[in-house]
Length: 476
Image (tube, rainbow, N blue to C red; front, side, top):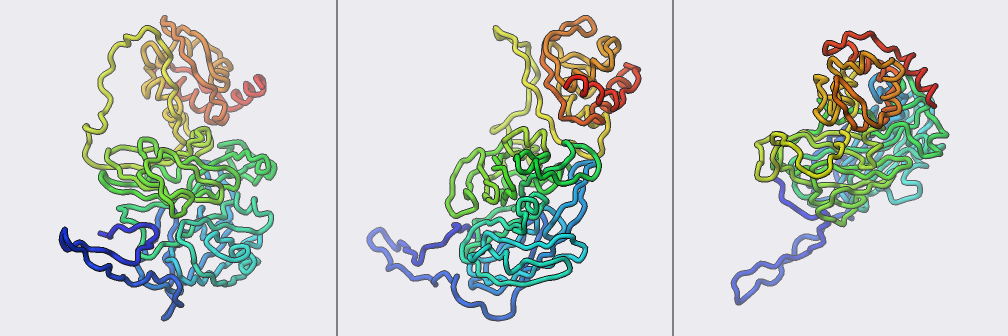
């Protein structure tokens, strides 16, 4: 168990009470060493890929620390069926997490893989000096170079490529974080994670399949196609979700590569006990959502008391549910009914005014596009997994006379453009609202409608993505 400490340790003495009548003379402690020159053999820094974090550092003196980063330009899947050539520090987005101690002398070697097509460099916000190291690390493909800096200031800092055009290099995934840990370390945490947000500007629309190219115009207009955690949609869900147990203290090192948008980082169902705003040394307590600027960071800490699945989002919510910035923290442990109870049985509504229920949150897709998968992700919260609908709120899709009688174009239009007003299904009138789902691809809409039309005794024929494309064109 680590002993708690504050981020900065300015105290140089401690007073100890012997009795009510007398106090001891302050006892001097050794001065905090952040300025001595390192001696001995250099240490090789432990580097980790997100969401993992290197071990904490408890050294009493500064050391000479070697860091090696290799730039690779690699084709990656950013969403099922969607690929993009990412420019990376270490083969993944974000780049590897670097953890050093305040006062360390860092020897950073940057290698540019021979297969790269572009020169690259690195600007570390933790560096005191012109360009943060960008000039001495500028290297062509197949080359490597080394420069040295002293980590003067404690905090959590972004690093990124600063080769022209800088926004393009950053948007293509060239960003990561370096933690300069104070002497004595951070307060104890049971688990530490690394989460970094970034934007992708693709020529194709959201979820358009195939290899996508960078769209400079979208970047200039600050209109990203994707806003992602850790470089890909689904990078923090399912088997890749963050894990914890009840009673554990969680620390997340949050970064924002940008290059344009400020993140509104939020964990649904949790309050951050402590936030080191902008990755610095000042602490704010009891924070619901914290702003993380482009090229900035934050350290958030909280203890999980209730088991379950917690959704991690950029609370600019269209980015979360329509551009990909969604993750999960899965917490195991005993239930805490004194803090949070599960849903009880539904009871009849007794209020004076009947209002339509709120529309459900749409989670990000996981795995290949299928009709059943899209239905479960987008439609099942209202129409239910078995297509029965919800009495008085959402019409059934199972054995639906409306589905059987409506034209294919009409059904596609309902999904693309939404549906307002009353409809009658199987003799019952419904007056709820369905929002436009035009953010879904033609393939997703066609697959979902085909699944519904073939399921639950409907026995109807398929709808092709060409049918969807035709309706889109006609209603623009």
